[in-house]
Length: 388
Image (cartoon, rainbow, N blue to C red; front, side, top):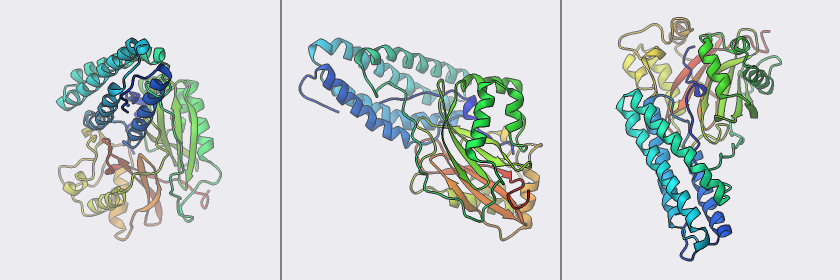
């Protein structure tokens, strides 16, 4: 299905972080206290979820991140440096202040609907980010202003034993294939690994992926029946959580990815509505209810996705995807219900057995730091261990 929000085709920004002290602090103590503040802010950043990709998501993403960053700045500014380090420290705080101001400007720019305005605001924020770097180095900060450590943790979910799975392929193996194709800048290989229900990557997209992710490595993997999760880290981009779905040839193929500063292979937020939303998607399609279907979509949904409906419908997604077959299968099976396969900090993935054929239903966590999910797509599941 052509419902991918390619994190690797969007820009990314590494956000860093912010206590108080009444007595002047010598350099070592100042750095120590500052890095504690930044580490605390880092934990808050890690809980915010996926990076925004489309303007509404970017606005939500930065609005949430700016609250954390502003609180961090306030705490950093409250630290009192000793005289011999005051000039260096004040220069760092001034650069941090400029970065906060620039990041705040991204929110109204994203909400404006003016792409040029958003591009300008993003460029100014990136410039402010770069100008902060010398002060970070001069101060000797180890956390503040430095790339975050990508954390891979057990997600706490396990696919049911009865779920489809490949005969021999694994998340580790497909992760290695994907990384090899990217680092070799091999567009043909990327398209061979791309899922058959996705549109092929055009040359421009291939170039952008291989440029943004040059030097990418695998940080962690998780197998979950018919899906494989791979946490990636790229020097220029940071963390990307890619997922792969069992395809027609009985092996895993690329389905999509999402970016987040601290990595997505971590537990899902508490109180999420993924299961409720997944059931609502199935119900809306079954009832041929466009309004109910649209209510499950992301703030980042665009007309190009082909999912939002104005009238009664018999297909969703692009003309080349399996959307028509998916809709028909749901309507032909009145009893099928989504069963959770996997959940992490960015998405929840469900299995739908429709008239004996397995399908995957993906629910993406919305940008902005909450626990709301939205309809993120579907894929037919190919031959499994029992059928190859």
